[in-house]
Length: 218
Image 1 (spheres, rainbow, N blue to C red):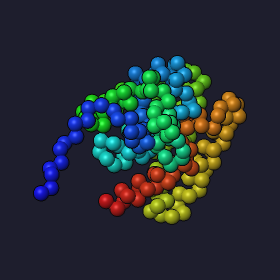
Image 2: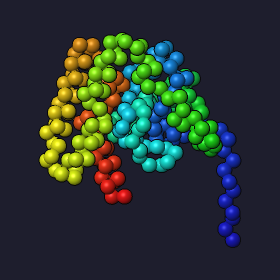
Image 3: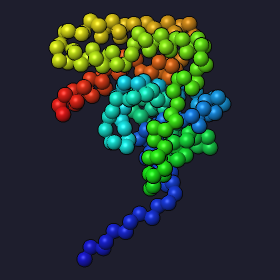
């Protein structure tokens, strides 16, 4: 007779690294001090802009973001495996100063992380002083390269190929020039651009296209 499997009695972190390899933490207002102390820097953070598709870990499916989020970037393009996870030791590189979401997550008991999810999350307005040059530059980029506009144009292009292609190309070109100019004037590392402006329009197009096509199939 097969022995009945006993429920898991786990009540502490096993340091298996599974959560770190799945995703980087979304940052909350409580994490501002980590940025001020430069424990978290622009090189290891990324901006997700309002309107772009992102996985909702509670719903278990991609959604279009209703507000911008800042999170720890992935190790490489196409991967959300946390850049601060050391794959050799399986440990966090900033464990004693890890973000609120990481401190809260208990994989054996998800109640607290579910309650925290999407509450008091960080955005650029929390970090860039009102009226500062950084605020003005990021607002200008948002005005000329809003995610909502590229989503609308891609929807038109998918339904009527060739109808919005030129407008999409112009937005891609403007976005590319804007980022290059900012980098040249400030000397910023290329990775920092994803923190100030989010991922490039060119990089966002595949995920937005997939989202639109999946929505049309429903």
